Amino acid sequence: MYYYVYDEFVQDQKFERDLALIETRLTDLGISGKIARLALFRDATELIQDEVKKGASTVVAVGNDMTLRKVIDAVGDSGVAIAIVPLGSNDNKIASLLGVPRGVEACDVLSARIIEELDVGVVNGRRFLNELHSTNVVGVKINCDGQYDLSPMRKSVLEVRNLADADDEVPAAKPTDGKLEIVLRTPSKSWIKSKTGVTLVPVGHATISCDAPIQISIDGELFEGEEFHIEVIPNRLKVVTGRERKF
Image (cartoon, rainbow, N blue to C red; front, side, top):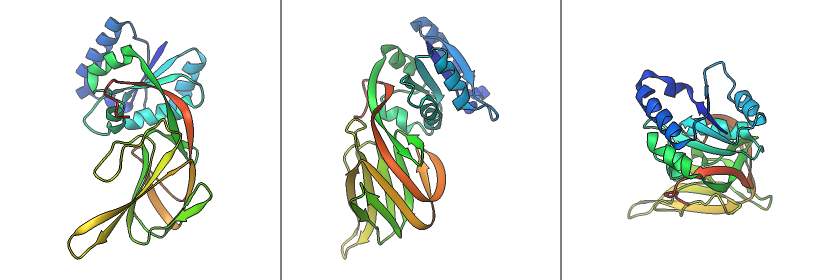
């Protein structure tokens, strides 16, 4: 049984046509199901967990990356599959990495039901699929697997990646290798030109600690704190992916 979780923002009138097309296509494919519409005072976790207990086998986030994060937190260790039907032009990075197109075309990916068992990252009890990200980090200590510390001496960009695309400086992070990747990008200056030094360390768990609160983004959602405990749980999430997935 499919359970579709509509985020609050997709209920805006500008998405009315998109939702109509999606619902028609899902019916044509024989995978329509119960719909939950999130609102300010509705607890997504409670709604989803109730439906999982009633037999939902696939929970589909209809929205963006933050919608998917709500679903990931809610399904927990239930073992049900999760999927996304991305809408809107912003905050759909994870859907792109999973090979899921925006709008009605995502329905065909959902129907094909290619399921991958992916690692999931956990930071202070909150799960993430993509990455933790913080800018202008300095004066922090990053303990890696309880064995050694990293301490950037200049302002750096800190990433802890689980599912991430390659760029000019680092390869893609694979969410199937049982590891997270700590990436520090530290700008330095040579006599010729500015450049960025990159440190990449695979870890199973890490602790980030600092003397003053720092802001981090967890799959697009901002949090603040002085200490973050991070670990990876291998092969924990069953995720519907597309053939164009980037891992």
